[in-house]
Length: 129
Image (cartoon, rainbow, N blue to C red; front, side):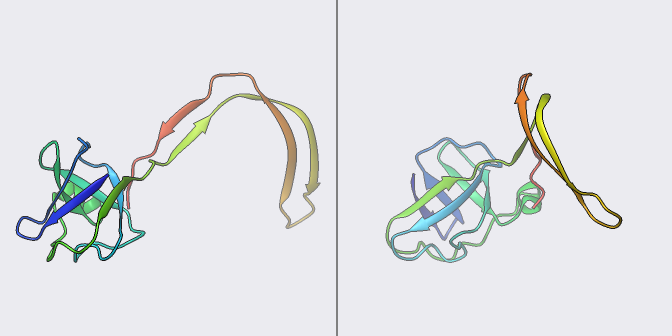
């Protein structure tokens, strides 16, 4: 998904209709717009179906504070979504197990083979960074 940046409005324009709060990263063929960095998570503050401000943290996203974009950069810019972290919960039956350690002041480990015998529940985590 390519995007352009407008230094006058600090907004980026793209083709997708992403929700506000979507976590994204940016890449480019040359130079990103000033204010944006490679390999960095950003939060979109949706302005319309195809425009958004870019927040540098979850707290800034909640506050509605976007980054000051001071130029459009050069080259072709790409925006991609970052998968949200999650945990998975399930019930399993231990088929085989081997314990190791466990002496005084040591950590005990359990090497096990399990058989999942329930549905797997995926729970999304609230981004706090």
